Structures are given as C-alpha cells and as structure tokens.
Image (cartoon, rainbow, N blue to C red; front, side, top):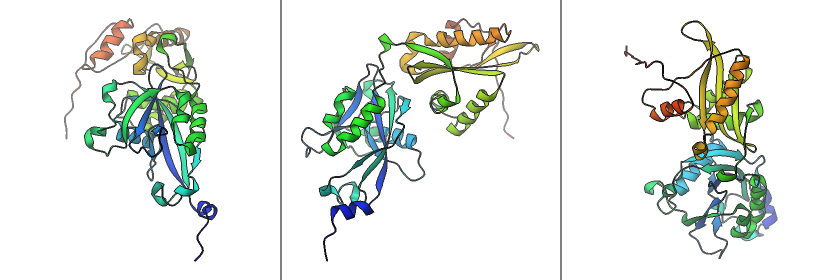
Length: 317
C-alpha cells in the first residue's frame, strides 16, 4: 500500500481549537513559560495555552488553562485578539504531535492583566499538584521578543499575537486614562469586568443587565479606559428616595485592582456627579453590605456619609 503523502494527510486533518493567554504585569512585560522538553534548544519558551473543550467558551478555556498550567487566578481581561490565529505542524510532526489527530491549531488569544502577587505563580506544582506540570520555569519578557523564543513553526503565529496586543502598554506611572460613556461596542469588556466585580452572577445575567442600562433613559454607565482597554466602570440611575424625592443611585463602581492605588474611582465619580446635576438630582445614594469594610472605606474616601445601617432577616419556609 502506497504511503500517504504529507499534503494529502494534511488536507484531511482538522485544526485543533485552542485558547491562549498573554498575561501582562504592571510594567507591560508578559509571562512566558519554559517547556520541560529541551529538544528545541533555545526555542522552549511560550505563553500558557491549551485546547478548548466541547461546549466551552474560549474565554473560559483560557482562564482554565492559565490556572492549570501556572496556578494564576488573579487576572482581569484586557482584550481579545479579533481573529483566530492559525499554525500548521511541519510534515515530520503530522500524525505524531497533537495526539496525531490534527494538522495544527486554530487559536483564540486573550490579553490579561496580572493583579496578584508573584508568589501565586507556580508552574512546577500547578494548583497545588492538582494538574501535571508542563513547564520547568517562568519569567517576564518583552512582548516583541517572544516570537524568537518559540519553536520556528509557531513564530509567524506569535508575530500575529504581538501585532494583536502591541497597543497594550501598561505603565501605571505614566498612564493616561479617560472616562467615556459606555456603549454597545464596549459590551464584552464591560461584562467581563462586571463578572470580576460580582462573580456570583453569571455572565449571561451581567450581559442582560448591561444591555438594560444602555437602553434606559434613566440610567448612565461610564467606563474608565487606558487607551482602548476598559479598566473600570461606574453605573448610575435615577430613582426615588425613601421620602419620595428623586435621587441618583450609584449602582456600582469598580476599578481593576492594579489601578486602585491611583484614586481613579474619583475620576469616575466626577462623571457620575456631572450626569446627576444635568438631571437636576442633588443627591447620590449608594449601598454596600455591612461586612464589606473595603467598600465602606472607599465610599467615605469618596465623600459619602453613612446615613443608615440595615440588618436583613430571612426565614426559610
């Protein structure tokens, strides 16, 4: 029987769907990991990445793979590459690499901001040993240098990744942030940041609530942007106070952790106050749980005064 040519074999093999993670630190460097295998010489460094399971959303796969490979959970979404990025295996790897089932990978790449301590990063014993280690080391590197560190057949794909994320320059000491009204084009970033703020609520419900805020004539939502990246938001709407007067209700205000030390919540609140004054509202109310000391302190720093404490009761029937 004639041996099947690489070209014919490649034509009948599918691409494997994969999600990849480019994790930025506050200096604008990216996380790269050293593969255990030394067969590729110096080309052994790569970004965390892995396959997308059936019925799994790419963003969920990216976060799962990041945790399984590096133990990292403390990240917030910056942006996602617009297009899928492909690479093909060399002929000699067809039928061997990727379990012998795929011609290469179709990858969806996401950029995240790392918000935790470096002690959280553990590639040797990821998730306290829950998952097998794929890497022997990690380090921070300049994004533009990463294509030269990956295996040659993936270098073109990495150049596309660099192109997709090179606009991200995260330098907290030289930042220029702007507050803009949130629009439908910001919905995906807004939903992810909302989910970070309130993870007990599903992304589906966050999306529905965000769309309702956009459509409401009595509400306004503001985003804090670093370039094109959403790093915070504030939501406000008009409602009646206990005495029947109209007030502005601060539905939520949130800043990505890496930016909180810069008092950027005040910048958001100023936009909320301007909106309230245009609506002829002379008071802004807000509410937090009694045990959320950080939120209580933040409100006091923003100029709010505590007016009431409430204990909520419930009886199971």
